[in-house]
Image 1 (cartoon, rainbow, N blue to C red):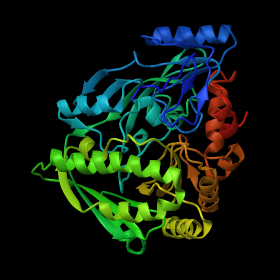
Image 2: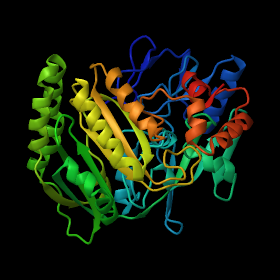
Image 3: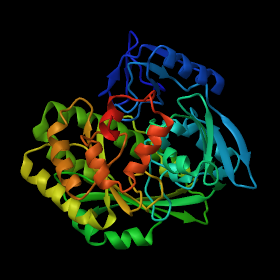
Length: 439
């Protein structure tokens, strides 16, 4: 997969293929000094600036017609501090590279999302998360960060230094400045035992609170048009290591999850009437399995089938009702949905615009295969999710605006006031930020 899905004649495209932009120019700085110079030059030319990672957002959060900053030279581990148990990395470092480097050093992040193609700053700035009872999003594991602001100053932020910037900039949406380095909390590498097993939809919802309470990381996928789910529990383990065997791993993770799934998506796109049958077959194709490995090999998996996604965080207590409404909507709608609905959780955190800010949350993610019309499904799902005061993932499709966010984020005004202070001329503005934060 290309690091930033880029098109011809200076057109930039995102991974999902649903967003494109034509920047006035592209800059690939090799140092923070070069980055600061690029921002100063943009200001002289009256252009806005956007740093872009791997384009894994489905929103136009990274799109710009001004100066596009590509961070691929701002990568690598700057420092590992074994006393403080932290690692400091350059902002453009891919999560994959961080995870592999940490593993070699006998270290690991506590929690992570299910893909690791993104850059550390792109993933954290949009609030990328996995699932966890106590452990939260990737951004919640940040102990410090460096932020290049509009006037060319580099702010060092932590709980002690510039704490009000730290509270917001961990999930800063690219609105406060350009993150140049991030310091993460790490811990000695550990083993996770993953248990994957099918479970009826009604049983998962009836027992959800218990499944959540009994497992460090619980998630499940529901297959629309069926009463079937596939559940996954990840818990720390004393070992021994028992990775997925290469052959069955290839069969389940590559052939079924990427190969056959890709073909099923093509068939479903060509003949939507076949989708409920395909869903029933594919929801039964996955058998139970248990394996034990180091964290990044359990949390993450390859995603080669391209899709478009919308995801909302609802209060955890509202999850069962939200999903029942979603299932009822799909059943009576005549929609044909070929992608499973993914459900995860996160504990409340203290980051200003985190989807889990100040409340225990459950995530409901709906997907459509790239190239199939998704508006009808997403609109109907969004109606249900917003009725439960849902907060959309900043990097996934949604239609919400600043007025809505002011209602669902108690600290929304705190963020916009900080933005006024750090970027009064809106050097880092784009259409997406204008919509979600207000002009």
